[in-house]
Length: 341
Ligand code: KG4
Image (cartoon, rainbow, N blue to C red; front, side, top):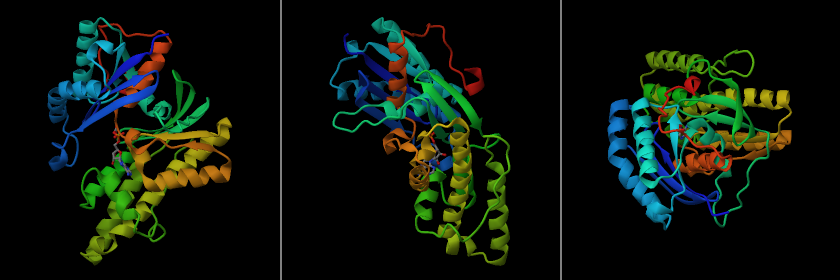
């Protein structure tokens, strides 16, 4: 069989990315992160769409030339159909359609979440390329999702639990903003937490039945705590920010792990992965590994470059669809919510 060369395109939020894989091996992965949102403390959808429109052609061209190929070598174009920001998704979807028509090659829609949960299957020359055996559990944690997903094959997955309010990444981002630490909050809190005492302060954990999550209560609990302490000492934040971040990060990780342990116990599955932007968190990565050792799990942590939004994961998911003989009709439209998939 000829090598299957898949171009992946990702434009669901504020990163424009294109990647090329050949037979599952990564040849290139180009990401243009949009800086335009920094001043607003969050992603501004209209600015994101405009930036994607500007970035998409140079990003795709670079990905193809870095792979040492020309555009006519592409066998299929995989793209993120959703979930995400509709205006952003429209740019990637329309571009993929246009390229598919121009090359007379199939286009393949990919669920962004499926990309995250398959990130460990991206193979790289000279690397160990470990990936989980099926079925496995993926803790999918990002700015928009907090889910436990059971994965039975590359194309079959089931959400066992998910947040009923905020995503864990949102809790990091909103609390960082509230504490005046900047955006995006996850990396800032992660860095400060490394120098702090995680046992110094306690925040109440939610009581949610089953395998679902909730992060809005713990966010409010931090808000009230900081507000009350600042009344007593206006310098409280500045003096204690490392310990606050470490304690807050610890409670978020505790909440994530409690349900993951429960899911593993209920399903008997001990192949465990994580994915999504928050899976870059050093505290979470260390905890998954220590918990895994204690419980006899086989754990698989994606490389940092595959934790945040990237097209390599879209290309690998597209590759699996291609192997299954699937392709997407040209009248497909992007969807902003998981429920519409
Ligand atoms: O997957 P992602 O890039 O975008 C989507 O939400 O789709 O995830 C972004 C989220 C943000 O909330 C960001 O604060 C968080 O991932 N994040 C982190 C870290 N790096 C990124 N959260 C905690 N620790 C980190 N090191």
